[in-house]
Image (cartoon, rainbow, N blue to C red; front, side):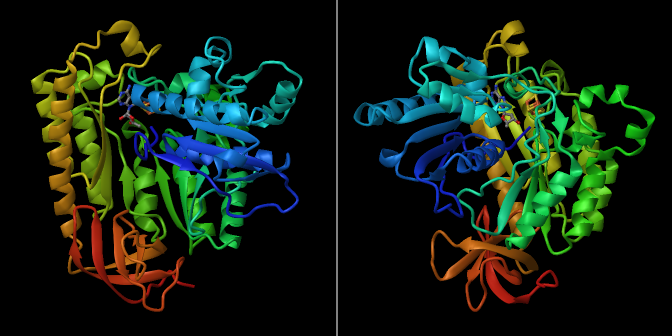
Amino acid sequence: MEKIIEENKQGTSLALEQNKANAKKLFIESYGCQMNFSDSEVVASILANQGYNTTQNLEEADLVLVNTCSIRDKAEQTVRKRLEAFNAVKKINPTMKVGVLGCMAERLKSKFLEEEKIVDMVVGPDAYKDIPNLLQEIDEGRDAINVILSKDETYGDISPVRLNSNGVTAFVTITRGCDNMCTFCVVPFTRGRERSREPQSIMQEVQDLWEKGFKEVTLLGQNVDSYLWYGGGLKKDFVKATEMQKATAVDFAQLLEMCAVNFPKMRFRFSTSNPQDMHEEVLHVIAKYHNVCKYIHLPVQSGSTRILKEMNRQHTREEYMELVDKIRRIIPDCSISQDIITGFPTETEEDHKDTLTLMEYAQYDFGFMFAYSERPGTLAARKMADDIPDEVKKRRLQEVIDLQQAMALKRTQRFVGQTVEVLIEKESKKSDLHWSGRNSQNTTVVFPKEGYKAGDYVLVHVTDCTTTTLIGEAVGYSEMQS
Ligand code: 5AD
Ligand code: SF4
């Protein structure tokens, strides 16, 4: 499952480069997971070809698009408030068009146009190429909606327009959709079946990024370890592939290795991994290549085998622990992060304690923790009562967060006194005299700028830390600096 940046985080996006010939203005805002932010770059690219440049000024926009998240109720409420704000601007500027993209568009479909009448256009995650036609339909006074989910759309042929970019790090989508059907999750309904993108188009996108000066790529998907290219089509149809297709298929370990070998001075990360699909070969590729970052986002959701079963997760507590052991054995300096849900239906204090003890076992570096939010249409919503009171969900959530924070501090402290390799991304938020970047393990590192610049690989001697940040001084360029 993808990593949520922050429940309410919004990104009002400006493109890295604007086309001077474009006269129309697009205001595009994204919520939710990194995949949505990445999809908005595909949409900006499609619209750049239709005469639109991006703007961060809502008042001057000809077209306002909001890329939405349905993962929890709170995420949807945030989007609703934004739609009200857009409609207030629309009253002053009636020619402005408003469109909803992404998971909420897929989940609520024509309801947006029929009952709520608050938007002009509704576009699901697989229908972005249809946006030019849909804009035409609005002009002709028709309802503009396309929420058809696709078997093979990966947008592999679209070169994304980088939005809000630091020019150093970028995301490249490698799979879309999810076949896992975790019972709490709305994603399989909003993003459809799992399909993988053709490896050559992934390599081409990485090459373009390299030529533009980017130094780090995160390979993105709901479930990257399940990546499988065999000539197109759904993952579930691989059983019907020809012998030739099977023989030439590319899995995630192979894709990651292709990236590492072809772009030795580019760093690679990936997100998100699913415990049941994370095979040993991937761990060996991470261990073998210096430019594959030593960091795995490995959502667990719960530490209780009984709850994991109710969630339809395909692993037990013990299997997850074995995987953590394996990671630590093959990649000793790897950092691991989690997603955890508290208060899933029927969760007892005993189950909750299992989550806390599993966390201690795994010694996570980071975590993304949530109270269970019932999502309409999911199996859990249909079959199970949302029976854990809000205050219990929240108390358990707080206990999980407190434990994570204590562990994070310990994990960060391990770097103090060491020299770590950092890719400089941007100026530190707190001081314009300092750079900010990350080490391979994904921990933020801050240090005085001296003569270095964004995009440089430097060695930083760490002298101090907070829960989330390492503080140090650069001692020279690393071997990754070309
Ligand atoms: N309620 C709370 N958290 C959820 N997640 C997914 N669905 C729900 C839900 N219904 C969390 C999972 C997932 C992360 C991205 O969001 O932990 O891994
Ligand atoms: Fe992630 Fe499970 Fe949702 Fe798929 S169904 S996106 S694996 S949480």
